[in-house]
Each structure stands twice: as structure tokens, then as C-alpha cells.
Length: 138
Image (tube, rainbow, N blue to C red; front, top):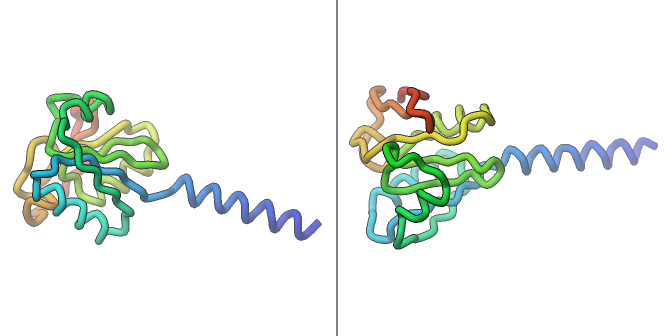
């Protein structure tokens, strides 16, 4: 009986660990260096990031449902939740998004100079959710 409970507990823990995965697939233009900077930043922040070079980023964003007004240079998808990270979003904002499954995606629209991969965070970067509502300030 004790072995059965131990096995069930291990299976539940394994399922939970998988659900909380930090794996992200990032689609980026092969000619964009700042995207690679963001990927390196996210890896340093503890995320497992797979970079996929995509020649038609507009099609990728349309397929994933990124609002055009919130577009940036690269698009990430969290493997465990399907949530979207658009552009140079800081790791802290990504963790905040992952804690709330109702948030479909977050964006740092455009290519802000005070964002990971572009420059140093200065406390003034505003990320927004996919409804355009301010989500995080870093």
C-alpha cells in the first residue's frame, strides 16, 4: 500500500513539473541580432529556449494570434501553457504571466531600447497583455 502511494505521489509530482515547464519556442527572423540577445537573456534567467528561424514572421504572428498593434521582432510560445511572449518581454513579466493562466499573452511592442536584448532595463519598460492593458513595469 505504501508503495502504491509513493508511486502515485511521484507520478503527480512529475505531471506538475511538466505543467510548470519553462520551455519556450521562439520564432525569429534569421537576420535579427536583438532576438538572439533576448534568447540569451531568457536562458540566463532559467528558461529553456529553442530558437526557430522563420522567414515569414507576419505569418507566424497571424497563426499565433498576436495582435498586430502589439507586434515586435520575435514571438515566443510557452510549451506547457501555449501562452505567447511577443518581443523583448522581461523574465519577471513572463513569470507573472505564467502564474495567471487567463493571460493569453504579453508584449513589449516595437523594439524598446530599455528592454532585454536591446539595452538595460531601467524600471520604465511597460509590457502589456494582449488586450493592450498595462501588465508589468520593469
